[in-house]
Length: 180
Image 1 (cartoon, rainbow, N blue to C red):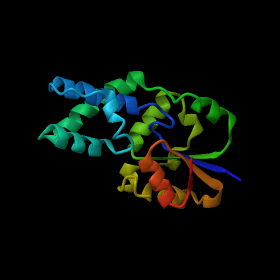
Image 2: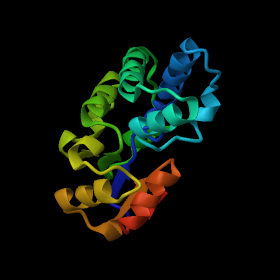
Image 3: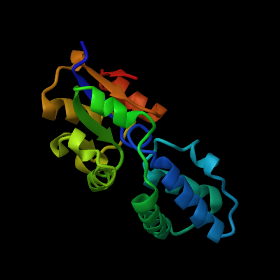
């Protein structure tokens, strides 16, 4: 019997990946580089810093740190005004009473901010939000999910992960947890 659900955040609870895609598109277009948002989705699931590293290599951009900082500034503005919940997630949260956790390659502060802006924090306990900045090792390594199991003391046989990327799925499977 499923009692616990560990949600990925970006792409599962909120449609934030589109914001990063728009930010990268906007930044690269200012550099005269043609980049369509759909190209971003081939990189979805990776940490933003990894996406930027890949794009810096591909487009011969030498200052990764500036690229990252500029993207974060652009996306922060979009995040405040354009963030939306994934279709159906609010109804799911309202009508189920699973113990809920979040396991994400995002940073905790940004997740909490996003949950608050969409009035979704009431469905989650901040102590059970596990993120890259807390664990230090991103997905596809299983560490985020292993920390969630360890800290919450939930039974792995009563737990599922809801993911939207192959990277997150690989992390969940490596942690020995069923993944949807």
